[in-house]
Length: 271
Image 1 (tube, rainbow, N blue to C red):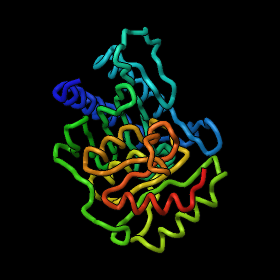
Image 2: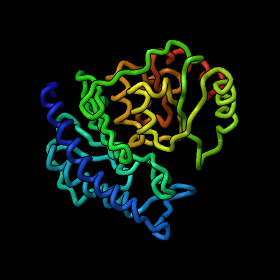
Image 3: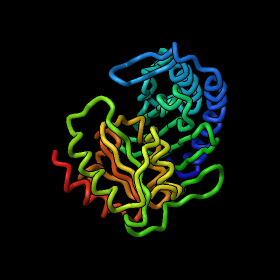
Image 4: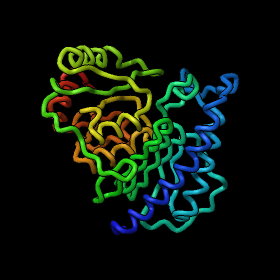
C-alpha cells in the first residue's frame, strides 16, 4: 500500500476508536463488578470488552472488507471470506487493561493494528481516560492527537524510567524475571507497571518511558504499539534481539538505551 492509502486508513481507524471510546468511557462510570467473567486464571473479561470488539470489527469491515481478523475475544460477526491477496489482517484488543478498567484504575486503551504479510503497517492506541490517541502508519511517523511524537533523547539506562508487566498466570520464568528487575531497579530511575502493554509502548513512543519489556504477551497486546515505537525512532525486538516480537510472546522496546536494556535481559533470560 502507498503512504497516502495508509494515512487515510489510519484516520478512519482513529475516528472509529473515538466512537468506541465514548462507549467504554460511559460504561466505566457505572461498571458492576458482578459482571466480571474469567477466561482463565486472573484473566478477566467483561461485556464491555465483547461489545467494544463487535463495534470495532463492524467498523473495520467497512474500512477494509478484504482484511481478516485476529481478535482477543474471537469476534467474527459471521464474516464472509473475501479475496485477500496481500494477507491483510486486523489485530484488535478492544480494551487493553481490562483489570484496570474493572478496578477503576485509569489506564486502559483500545489497540488496533493492521498487518500486511508479517509487517505492521498501521497502528492506533487510544488511551481512554486522557483521551490521547497515538497513531502511526508505515513510513509516516508517529503522532499523538495530531502532534508528532518521538522517543526520549536519554542515552543511558541510568537516565531512564522503564515500564514492564508482571506475569499473572504463567510463573515458570519468574526467577529470571525477578533477576532482571533486581538489576534494573539498581541502575535506572525506576520501573512502572501500568497494566496495559499498548499504553506502555505508546509511552515509549512519546518519550515518557525510555524502555519497556514484558513476556507472556499476545499479538493484540503489542502489534499497534510496535509500529508507534518504530515510527517514533525507537527499536523493538524479542528478548534475544530477534524479530519475533508480535507473535513470540516477549518484547523489548526502547529508545537509544535499547542495546543496554537488551544486554541486561539476555544475561538473565535463557530459553
